Image (cartoon, rainbow, N blue to C red; front, side, top):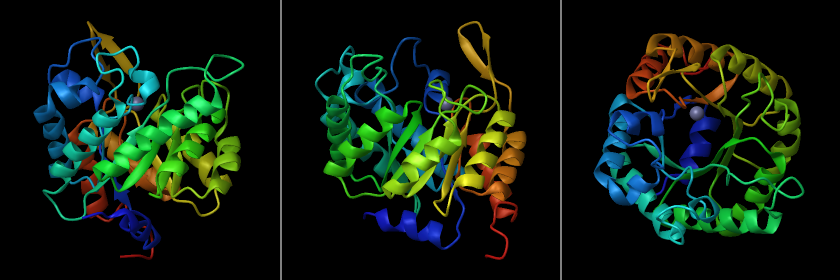
Length: 304
Ligand SMILES: [Zn+2]
């Protein structure tokens, strides 16, 4: 059963939704080799993909994200699965839906990250080619049964605008859009949260916000700026577990589950309506955020 309206309705009813945590960081713990793209596991290790989804569902997540962050045809071009974007995205959506079925009301968000290319005139990517790649990815995720579409970790406004245009040609599902402000409170391209909201908010998106980024202290400033300029669109905030530190080949993240839940509580008090984790966050981080939610700390004041 599709729940696409439930994402919008639940937010309108004042519910705080908890989204899942990291994909790549957890796959590395599960044995994914350095240099392997997480999307390859959709075909190569479907049981592990389903297994991580199941761990987040068991932790209590309301929303799980498909393993399709790098799943545009443009990003898959150099991989073993070049030319199979439609099949890969549809299969990834099905794997997430299978795991989501374990508990009533778990929503699946179709994750779409940047192409990894720069748009003209800085790079070679045209708006038409970008729009077409996201049209293809969104159509496949919609076919596979996701409840909501998500553009995440974007840093360039022109690429996001082209992506939104393409997605709208393929799907009427609710769309959330989040950028990575990983240079303090700016993206890699110098975009501020204010400028992002001014450009994206008029496009009828179901949620807007920030994910990944750098430190949680920086994210706190980003959330405050988003909340100050945003007018009524639910804020989606999915930060990293703080800064990574390389231990051998493995990135270790500085913020543990309890501290993450404290930050999540503060982000909700500032205005976040969807909260979750990005790089470095485990199902235990999710569990702690849920515990904060069920303890009442993540509820919107005045609502039950
Ligand atoms: Zn991240």
